[in-house]
Length: 117
Length: 113
Image 1 (cartoon, each protein chain N blue to C red):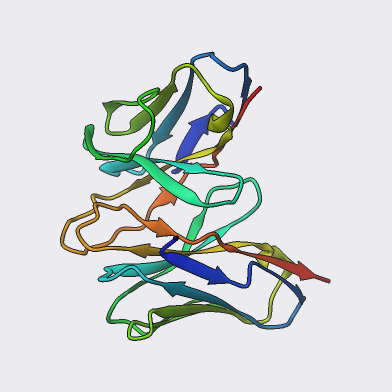
Image 2 (cartoon, helix red, strand yellow):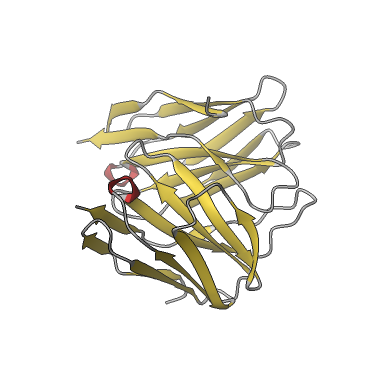
């Protein structure tokens, strides 16, 4: 199947632990994203990578570190997890988004529900 | 204050009926406006994408309209089906944004038999 996949789908962990979420896309896209969806259902962008280069880095704590080993993968590592990190995290990908107002559809993964106890 | 406001917050409709969801935005200028459908426990899926110069776009039983002057968009669902039960999210993209989209909170639609 051509898609954006994430693992794990559910992640339950204790405060203070370090965890990673993996994302892979086989759509041949150049750009990948990480979003956080909080309890109020707002989706907020965290990071975006274009051809393994960071292009968007929103004001997220530096405990969150994205890593892109190649343009098909964008993993999210979280250090010293806190209660407020509990949310659903979505990975997405698109063809390269341009500055000039061109648009490309973003394809989302199924999400990873992170629960910090 | 969020730059994309949606109404109603939730909606219950009978199968076969039509409904219209509203989106007001303050993002200006903007490049394009998108509607996404998010099923429970799944990622959002794109329904329509409209540039600032487009007034309407359809995708099957879904029709989106855009009034860039009043900064309003609507999503009309025709002859609703049980599978239409989902959250519908309005998303606005500023120009020069490198894909940095502004999301609304969504309208939760429940279609009942």
